[in-house]
Length: 257
Figure (spheres, rainbow, N blue to C red):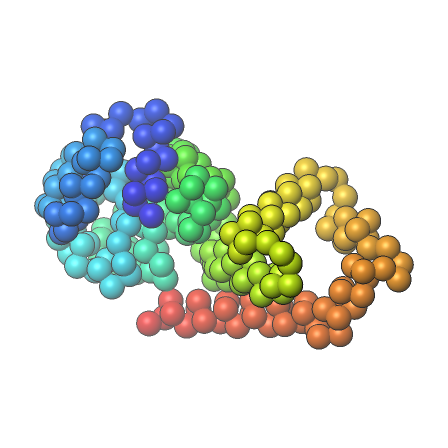
């Protein structure tokens, strides 16, 4: 995700030399330097000494150790902290820093890697409108953004953060159903994906509801109607709702650990 963000903001016009990335891995730093021409370091403290905006793009279990390194260098006047560490709440970060620290939590999903991501942003009371604009400009470089309360982030994670996996699951199921077609697997996969992309774009551009669009595809007594009847008989909508509810509960549980 860090590489996706770096690529996105450079593509948006930011000078690569305005970006400093730190990592303990030489191979990672070499790739970042080679691919994007940014500054790199193994010393996290150099980030705090040279950057006004600090993005914590690390695994959740690494956050505490990184903040411990930076706590003496970070202050509210000079630094905006943006975290994309999954499950780490703003209060968890604030507890390790000064109480007045400006902190924004971001939750991008994996299509950000191709600049088609959806990112939710939430901020603490110390953050200004300008801080949110800064965060939005970063994540708009890899897709679209929304701002919500942190209390809504668990449901957002279940719906949109995990959402790409549900689409991949659907594609997997459709591929299993397509084995009777005289197509190469890659060809049918691309046809299915184009169908999903086209349907999504139609739903996005149309003023009509998804229910109305569905009815326009469904002729009485026809092929589509029978398929939808089977889905209803097997309570697909109820199953999806249950899945999202359980995923939301799991997100809450992980946030407590």
